[in-house]
Amino acid sequence: MLILGIESSCDETAAAVVEDGRIIRSNQVASQAAEHNLYGGVVPEIASRRHIEAISAVVQAALDEAGITARDLEAVAVTFAPGLIGGLLVGVNFAKGLALAAQKPLVPVHHLRGHIAALYLTHPDLKPPFLCLVASGGHSHIIAVEDYTLFRVLGRTVDDAAGEAFDKVARTLGLGYPGGPAVAKAAQSGDPKAYRLPTPKLAGRYDVSFSGLKTAVLNLVNQAQMRGEEISISDMAASFQYRVTEILAEKLMLAARETGAKKVCIAGGVAANLALRQLLERDCERIGAALYLPQLSLCGDNAAMIGSAGYYEYLAGARAGLELNGLATLPIDDPTLAAGI
Ligand code: KG4
Ligand code: ZN
Image (cartoon, rainbow, N blue to C red; front, side, top):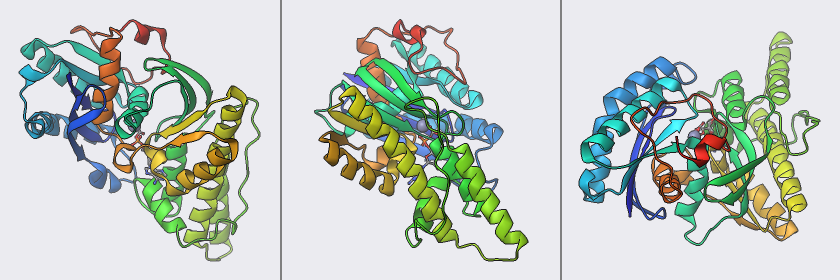
């Protein structure tokens, strides 16, 4: 069963064809990151315009790469929430037009469910239930994945998302956008113990917070500037990365131990972070849980993950009509998702 996935919620225009939720037949991504880098972050207006320019060719390239036409598809799946509204509307409207023209069902996909589905593309044998940390530029959630379309949020960030913190710290250190890979690279030659950064104390058992950490970095950099001292960018990047990954790993392990999870997963852009991957490998071994990591090329935004999630949503009966709208925010466990939109 072939599903076309379409993704345009941030700064990647992407389309992919996925077979039975597990096999990538094609995967096309047009990234705008280089352009947004000029401004130090994603400019929503520019993102929308670039999506409009790219989407038609990207979808055609995905069909061509898979060696099929729209007629061969079972359904068209599209990210409709959450994300930048201008970008979402481009994908949603294109998907609607294609579904109508090709007489195919339209399947609405939640972006974070897509990130989790990247794990199904990497590990053909992985099945729910499992515990998953989803850490991206907009979200940091610890989620009990009870079934392919059944999710329970156990913890979340109370302020900034992990990726957002990487992006903001990268900006403070003059490392450019996207910040995650830049901070990780700078951290390679730094000392993670060089700067002592705070660990947040939070009421929610599995909640995380990164705003204080980000502010601590900013304060240290400003204080050093005022004193005319040099700050070591690599040491600061390493210290920050060390603390972020430690916070994420600690909360994820706590949730794993207390829920008795045997399978632990991570997903989203921050899942590409090698320090986090190594830390979790060690920690999961300690508690006797199996760790499943998404392949690096599927951590960031892509449409193969939307095609995979779309397959499971389609099997569960999720369908959208031509009234489908994009939504900037929507919880991953929103009840309307269970019935389709
Ligand atoms: O999932 P994603 O591609 O887009 C969203 O849905 O937000 O995540 C992007 C985020 C950015 O904040 C980026 O800085 C971060 O993931 N990221 C990383 C790494 N690669 C990307 N953060 C830490 N380490 C990385 N290697
Ligand atoms: Zn994403």
